[in-house]
Length: 546
Image (cartoon, rainbow, N blue to C red; front, side, top):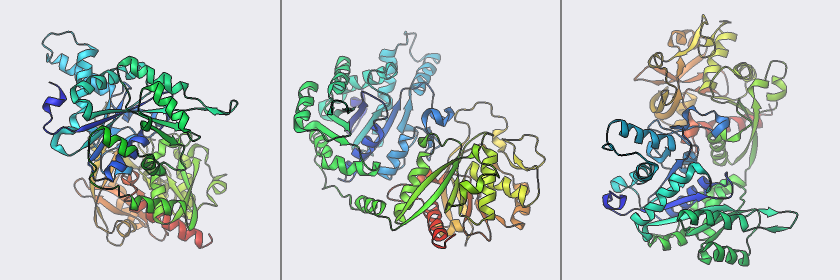
């Protein structure tokens, strides 16, 4: 049965594909279009279909695919979902990210259960039917007027072909007025020739046409402005209307893109093609206010980001963006200084950290770089430099304090040393019999009770919070009393499981470690309070002349 027949209210669909090269920013264009449509009063959501065979990105090395973004319902997803949430200020879920691996897993499970009644299972129709079913899942409940679907990869990739075939079929099932394809492509600038070239885009569109998909809108990434003649040429050779060739010039920040797309009238073009009457003029005043603060800071701080994946900025994408939001909130330019933890030792730690206004020790897994993180934490603790530890960063702070303040020299996390005599960080009970790696960590949103008067309570302005998690190891409560007696206090507790979620150090301007991932909930409209407080502490430290 087609999605058209099962849907009570016809939801409009926008499919975003990419051509010429990867990393053009389909996620940012999708989020920007969704933002300006949302600003017109429409209910919009975005979903990402990734062509890799992994069931989800949870088992991928950050060097492979950037950070793994976690939703409230515990889905390990593509980092583009972070962009969707940061722009739209609405949570996503498991349904917003689907991979080829998950599609094939579902179809194979159905085949094993006999659901296909002995038929030969094939890419068409079985795989494409499952793709279409997933693409239309968010229609249920009537929550959205428009669903934007981003197709991962680049047109021409063999991996993406089933998705392109699925959206070709959906065009017929949904109807022309309920479907458009937006194709994001590159107009390269040849410096030697001194001109922009449209030929790669023409070839990319021809590749789409050979599959049976005619793009309705072309969004062209470019370093230089497109001339009127160039737009007309693209429209002629790509068989699109002249006003549907959109310039997407390189922007100073990703948060400029919604306003640039508004200026190009992308929202009006899309609404006209989908036969939607705009509910109101776009209201983006708070967005403009945010950009004003972001681009006109009144102060500046340097924050060290101590991690083990610093070669790839996308590995800590949500942390970087959370600092952007917190910086704008404080009208402060936050300069992130990447520091590779594997390169830190007692001999050079002062050189790397001595001139910083704050240090964040990043999350991660495994033994590599652990000693560098512990060395960094010891230095900032002793020198009263504002410190923020996330997940493994919090665990390293516990290990450092146990070793150097409590004099438990062998204290360690059992993740690093299974035979330690002082396992201050231990494996969670429910993890002890788990052997499968994918989707088996403590994932998603859990509640936390804060202690009144703590740094975290002052930041959140409430005693009850909910934050997202992704970990297997936890604070060992056997060591809680001795740590608290020495001044390292548990100020956030998950009451259901009596798990320590937040640790704070007394007699320090700002020393905070959290087991959860606050960066995942920071948005333009609602900067995360812990990041905002950390940046304020760094400003105070800087202005004190330290």
